[in-house]
Length: 113
Length: 114
Image: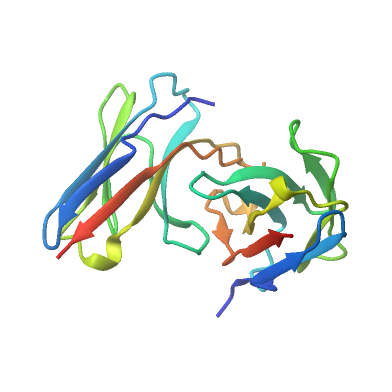
C-alpha cells in the first residue's frame, strides 16, 4: 500500500477553514483515499473517502487532483470540538475482501478560540 | 443504536498475569479487528477475523491471541503482559460485502501493566 505523508501538526482558530494535505505518491489504481478523525481516548471515526476529483459530505470535503498523488481534507469553519488527530489512509478496495487500514502518523489539529 | 462495545474501558494487570479484553458489536459485521495504539502513536493492526477465519499480522507477537466465539463477540488475550504492552486496544468492525470499507471503532480499552 502507498505510504502517506502529512504534517505532524496544524494550528487554527475557530471559524477558519482548515486544509490538511496528504501526499501518497505510490497510490495504485485500486486504491481509495480515506480520512479518519480521532479524539483523545476514543477510537478513530471515518470522515470521508474519495477516488478522484471532489467529494463532499456534511463534515468535510476531499479534493483529489487528477494524478491522485496527493489529497486535501478541507474542514469548513472549524470549532474547538474539531481538535483531534486526522489520519490520511490509502485503502485498497477489493470487493468482498478485507480492506486493511494502515495508519500513518496523522495530523494533530489544534483549534484555538 | 448499533455500535461497537469494549469492556472494560480501563484494565490494570500485573506483569506476566494473563488478561483478556472483550469486544462486542450489534452491527452484524462479519469482520472484526484488533488494533494496538501506544501513547502518541497511530493505531497498529494486530489481527482480524473475517467470519471465523483468523488473519494474523506478520509482526504481531505470539503473546497476543484472539478468539471469536460468534459473530457478535471477539476477545483479545495477552498471555504474559509486559510493560511494553501498556496501550489502548481498539476493536473495530467492517462489512466488506457491502462494497464499502469503512471501519467502525469501539471506544477502546486502556491497559496498564504494573
